[in-house]
Image (cartoon, rainbow, N blue to C red; front, side, top):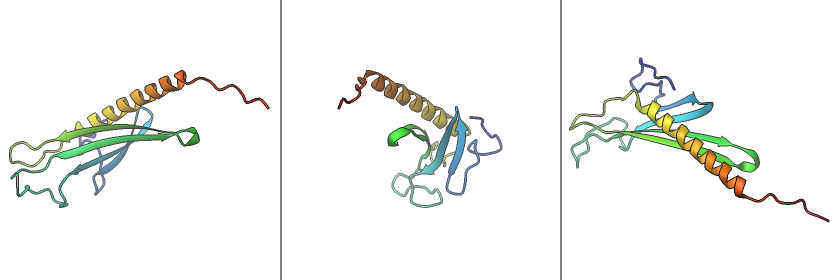
Length: 125
């Protein structure tokens, strides 16, 4: 995935912090959010700190007979001291890389499981 240096988070995101990119032949859905309930990031009244920002990436591909394989990646950007989180242009790239790695390891594990499953002989009448 290429970083867009003109964007604070390295990718163009919509008003809800979502983006879709293509990496390694996969369509990857990205979401950038914090855990506050307010649309504007504010200091937590209990801790006195701003909330961390989560950057998640997900791959989901469907196959035959309803099979589905996923890959997930997450990066947490924490605030420094009492300052709010500063956008990290590499966070989305790292989350996407983690999702692709997770997808590939799950695909390999699934292939190994299928290889162990004995082939069923055709039914005889």
